[in-house]
Figure 1 (cartoon, one colour):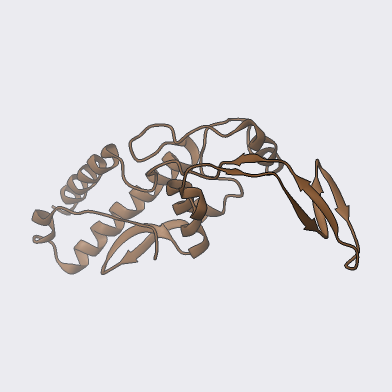
Figure 2: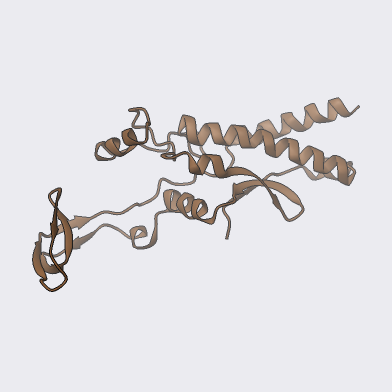
Length: 192
């Protein structure tokens, strides 16, 4: 499955176009929407309703700093730049849309929007328990033991909260849909 946005074109225009001109118009619309959605999501940090996607947790900010990101806590679905660079115009059933080539980026985008696996459920309580460990990181220190010796490590009870998702981001906003109409009108004006 690929996360995609199909680019709509009004039926009344579709009927009046030749296949070549329809392809040209759809490609023009898709390229314009690519620029708009990429800027909205990966620079402004806005969702499909035009609202802020969310705020990064303070604990995540050092990770962002390691990748040269600014200190803004506004969620922009970008850490390494891989997702926004892979967001592109793609062919969909004889028309054009927006999506990812890399299936991993599709999975990341879906997880960021809708949560992931066990994280789609509510937070859950982890009971205090003992686990056997060969190598573990505890309080920032690595405990290493040889394969013969197995140490036991006491795990405190805690609440595990996973990625719940930020909501729909990779869809067109109402403003972007209105811009499609403007692109069509402009394109038709240039054709006459």
